Image (cartoon, rainbow, N blue to C red; front, side, top):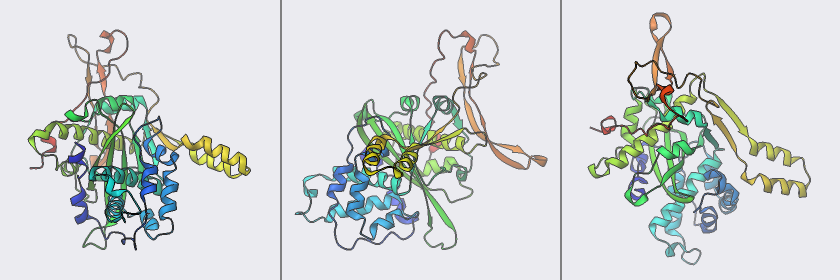
Length: 392
């Protein structure tokens, strides 16, 4: 699946983004930096935190810090896709005596370029890890989204974030590929990048890049990249999903299409929840706090504290700590077996004459929960029908 889906959005990017950063003058040996950032196993940290803890960010800064490419990559208008293209270009043109690029195949080059570009975009944009509570994951897994909602409402809170999936989300967001049995998504990089649309120097456009990271047990499994603009005010969530998933249209890949639709829809629902006024969002800037404490220490104590803080990270915890007391109560008539009534996001009329609209969330409910013995069962996996992502 990775071979098919890593190309999603790349052809579209050349038509929709503005001018790309200028190419490098000459070649730089980026191989040591690439090797330092290579990750094959997950060791309990979020994916981008592990990249930094391995010293990869410092290695890239050492390799490119004195070049004009480094500040270009930090520019808010640079896409992750552009960083990846530059890395691939460097790999293709490296002098054979200064690298071992000729000893690895194209697939390995692409994997390394994806790992480096996603993590560099995240850290150079001062990204944040977003984690949902188990209660919120339960709510989102049992909810739908009105595909007619405007895509402009799906706005990640930061320019760069890594939405890390918890146990429940990973359980129901599987990678649909016979060659990747038991693979699941660890999380997804979400980059919201402003730029000028080609041919339009007045209006600012926004491109949303989603790069899903998969794993098998604790082993890195691959990446799936999706890219689409969100600048059109009348564009709906359904239209955006159809566009970014349009490459997966072949009948023999319908299962992959449904799996990716479910995964992207989950991300959309998470950001819609965060846009609600009543959303519970708790910041946890442990890494920044550790750096502030270290700044006032002597050299020896500072080095010790920085070593201990390598596993820390800035993040936000989203969602309620527990499900509401009435979550498992339902009003269905007798004779109906216990089942989930799905929640959903929708636009609610309000104001004078109901002429205004606001986003609301109707929470899911477990009907006839009193008939159950023991713990509340886990919700069933939801897969959207193919018709809602039809590109015809």
